[in-house]
Image (cartoon, rainbow, N blue to C red; front, side):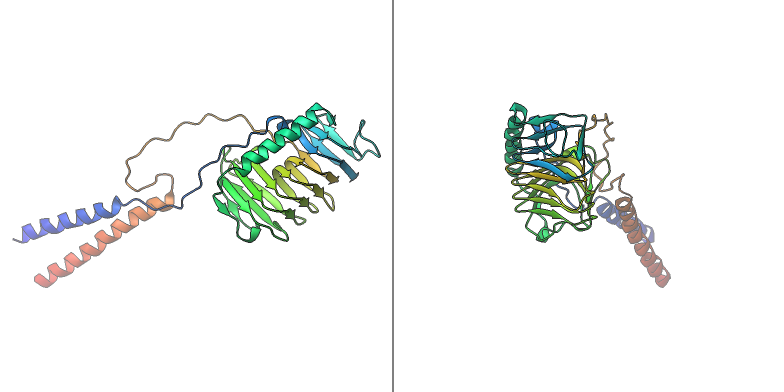
Length: 297
């Protein structure tokens, strides 16, 4: 009889452990990776303005792309006019020509594409400070200042981030956009309903499409991406813009497939939890068994 009861008890232990060990672990759901925004000829530009493009103070440096304007260009080399406060490295000037016009047409198409996506979430109060975000489409409501500290974008080389500011986009001096995990600036996009203003030494990332103007205020800001003003001017002040191009996609080996045991081999915390829970239950039940056995004696 005692032997039978012992067998039943061991069977109960095994059933209990199996029930808990095979319960899938609930994880926070990540947003699906959106398709990148097709830039077409916009990808050739470091800066493109509908009207004036200027740099009243320097040195402003535009790297790896063209400067384009469908209006007036000042403070850069000819055919721009005025004192030269800016240089273009790895690009040319497209002034009121077919390339500039096509660029604006393609910019309109790119904004239409980005704004036509379904938003994954809305940033509360339009404040980006201190956030760490993964791939997705984010709506950014109006705020007096959208970024005064750090915004971290986390993912991999294929992660795409689309931000849509309903009105203006404003950063404070020393604010930064940081990329982690291999995220590429070429996959970050901002559409702005009116003006984009970058103050002081802001370090910003992404292709910025502003419906009206783009203004760099106190000087010393950097932009890893592109500055595109769709209907108005761009004003640089001692600004560095690096046209963002995507690195070649790396070949990766698919991870091996494991049975759906609820244990995620790549997540130590999940593995630990799946081990501790059933083990703890076994220990508790075994203690109860020993106590009862002693009492029965």
